[in-house]
Each structure stands twice: as structure tokens, then as C-alpha cells.
Length: 188
Length: 188
Image (cartoon, rainbow over all chains, first blue to last red):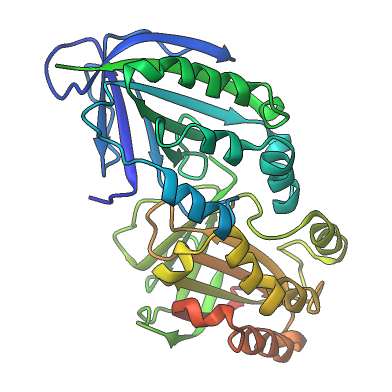
């Protein structure tokens, strides 16, 4: 067990762990992921691909890459934990960014990420309603560069749609080469 | 093959790939690595641990984490490639940093790394004599958080000793919880 790791398994079979029912999968940029009825979130492990799975994506929580100490203090004060009983809605958004993004220097990426695109500030407007956890995948050779997992109550679906809509119009998103938007409802 | 990956294999047996002879292994901070006569650098792969190996360390090249665009331009203009025929000396320096380091925000780590410790500026003084490549290990669950590989000519051994000595006196190095210094000579 390594608490930083995660594996999301989409499957069609009702057996095994099923936390979430998949409502829909939308390809926003680039290729889609196959439709499946169920998604399990395995916290703390990189699972081998189960035989009955439709697809599997893996990630790892890492240190902060852009957020300053001052920004982080505000986020920590405002944000909510995952697993709230009222959070019966979730979204998993896997993303890839272009080679041009990864070739930029640290200050160049920070300038696009926050100074221009206000990624941190926009996300903060939706705290604590939208709980969020970021996983990295590029360095581990995973299927996607980033997986972001969101949890929220049914009455905040509109707010979540607004949040992702605003981010998709930023300069940062010009560097997104693939984005899949997976919406879920808690199982049982 | 993923050109970002690397596996270093230390072994005692003369069979198999052997690029470098190990002159000495010094534990600078924390636990040592076992002594072995040979080291192979396998570029582009994460090898499973070979049966005859003494130890194996793995890493991955990643995007720049602290360097600005201006600093990067100067480094690119000054630096040398690995594999120069005159670079018959090498060093492999695996490092871990503390939880306190990893909990810092991006601007806090950058401030210690460069504004206070001048890691980039000190390294740049030794270009192009000391060629350098950084691999990351923390997010992939490797044995060390960082592996830095250095190549230089025999007449630059003193300069290399000075470089690592200066870095070890910086504020950044207060966050180093383990450091092993492996010196090598090219085989054949």
C-alpha cells in the first residue's frame, strides 16, 4: 500500500468492487474511453488490469507543482475532504497535455497556469462545494498525464459544469491534447 | 522503450552489460549502498531486478521543476551532452529529501533551491566540464527520490569534488535525508 497511488477500474460485470455508476463518458478533446456501467476507485494501489475490466487508469498524488504557500493556505482553509455523505455525484477527468507544454520552463508554465488562466483562483471559487483530488500519470507511464477526481452534491451539478466550462476556455487548455469527462453517481 | 526511463544495475559478475567500474561508494547522509565492482546504465527501460545484481536503482527524466526560461536558455547554451569520449569519469548520486521538503509549496521550494541555495547558478559554473542528467524517482516508487548522473574528464575530478562540496553546504541540503556518492571510471 502506498497512499499516494490510485487505480480506477471501469467494468461491465456486476461482480467485485463497484463504488460508482457511470452516467456518461464524453470525449472533450481527442479519443474517447469505452462506455462501461461501473467504476471502482482503488485508493493506495496500482492494480494490474483485471480480466473483466473495460479500461483501467492509474495515477499518483505528488507534491504541489504551481501553487504558492499563500495560495495553498487559502485552499486548505476552504476545501472539503472526499467522501462526504452528501457527495453522491462525482466526475473523473483524465487529461493529456502537449509536448509544447512539457517543454516549457517552470515560470512559463506557472504564468500560463495561474497568471493568465487563473486555474487555482477559478477552482477556489467552487470550494468547498466541489471537492477535488489531482493525480499525476505522466512520469509513471500511465494512460493519461493527469486524472482529476471531483465529488459534489446533486444540487452542485450546475456549478461543476460551470467550473469545467470556464477552465476549458483558458489559455492553459490550448495545451490540452486529450480530455475525457466521466460523470458518475454513487452506487447504493 | 521510453527514452525518459533509466535503470542502473550494480553487480559483481563480469557477465552482461558493464559500462562503468565502481571506484568507491560513500554514504554521505543516511544508509549506504552495498559495494560492487560494476555498474551498467540501461537507458530507456525500467529493468526488473536481475538475479545477479547487487542493487538496482531506477528513475525517469521529467519536465523542469524549478528552472526559469531565462536560466534554461543559459544552461542549454553552456551544457554538454553525455557520452563525450573524454568523459571517462562519472558519478551517480542518489538522494532522498525529507517530508518537510515535499510539504512545501512551489514558491517555497524554489526560494530554497535557487534564491537561497543557488543550485542552478552553482551547477552552471561547472558547465560544460561537468555534464549532468537528473532522473526523478519519488512518484514512481523507486528506491531514491532523485538520481543525478554526472560525466567528466579525469582532469575535472577536483572541480566535481568542489561542486558537490558547495551544494552540500547549502540550505537546500538541510532537507537531504539520504545521499550516496558513487564514483566510476569507464570500462574499457
